[in-house]
Structure formats: C-alpha cells, structure tokens
Image (cartoon, rainbow, N blue to C red; front, top):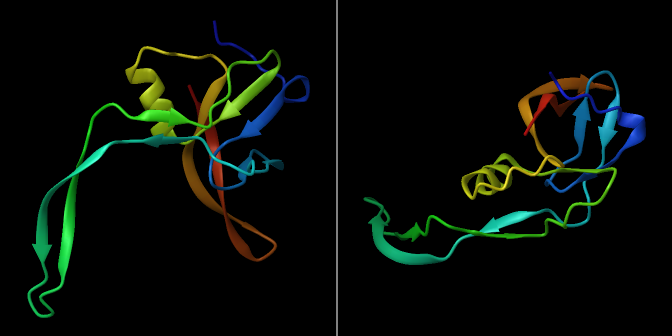
Length: 123
C-alpha cells in the first residue's frame, strides 16, 4: 500500500540549493544552508590544454562521503535533500522515511520566467 502524506499536516524543510515547486502551486523555499556530501579527495593527475598549455588538476574522490547539514528525524518534519545526499544515505542502508529528493525536475514558466519544478518526490 502506498503511503500518504498530507502536505498541511507536515513541515517541509528544503535542504537543497533552490526553491522547490511542486504541483499547481506548492513552493518549498530553500533553507539558509543545504545538506551536502563531502568527499575526501586526492590529486590524481592533470589535464593540459593544447593551445594555452593551461594545467587543469584531476582529483579522485573517495567512495564514502560525510553527510553534513541533515538534522536528525523530528516528528511531522519532511526533509528534502539533493539526489546526491539521498543516494549517499541509501548506499549506507539508512532509508529514512522522512528524507526525500526532487524527482523528474523540469522547467515551468511562472510569470514569464522559467522556474525549475519537481514532478514528484523520491525516497
């Protein structure tokens, strides 16, 4: 059976870098700070551009990142994070039912300008 969440009965905390537009008018404003995954990195080479000889460093990132900025679960609160953060949680076997990410983002015209919007949320 599908779970049902009634928007008026929960508080949404948007921990992405942008406001999220859902459905016909629900706008979830971004919080001051986004949740992120921080990876350790090590130099792994360089790319030299042919004409300018400019050197661009190449880095290798470790596979397990540290999740920062995601609060502990709270009753009645839904956290919306980037797909990268949600994927990191899932890979660790932490399938928090209070954490979602935008899914199927598209652009929608609002007052003459394009606004990114999600057509769904993913767990």
